[in-house]
Image (tube, rainbow, N blue to C red; front, top):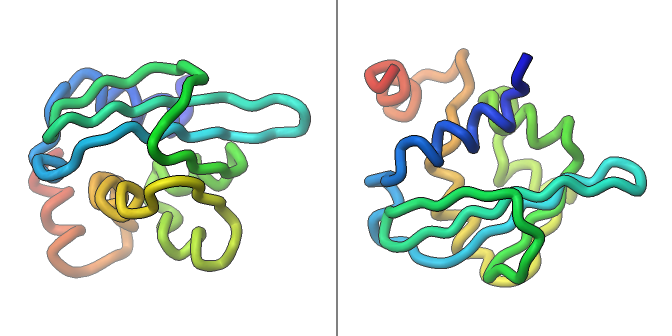
Length: 123
């Protein structure tokens, strides 16, 4: 069974373009730390064009989180910016990219409002 994190990144890679990121450019690396192991996801954004890999290379922005936390974010059970503000996640580099990318994560299934309505229309 594929976890929500893998499904999220594979879906982005298949899309190849995300209109919500049309004004964004840069590289964002997600480092998922579990004990001595770190799993990497690299998202290269060029005005909405997306390239996803699992490379461990330099990036404009690096986000660090536990796999469990990121799984909750990728599935819409947790809000990434709230986790960042609580100190459950770290960011190094250009934090503006995190704010831009946060918009493409799913909203909570219990949420009401435009974000929830939009994600229902897309699926």
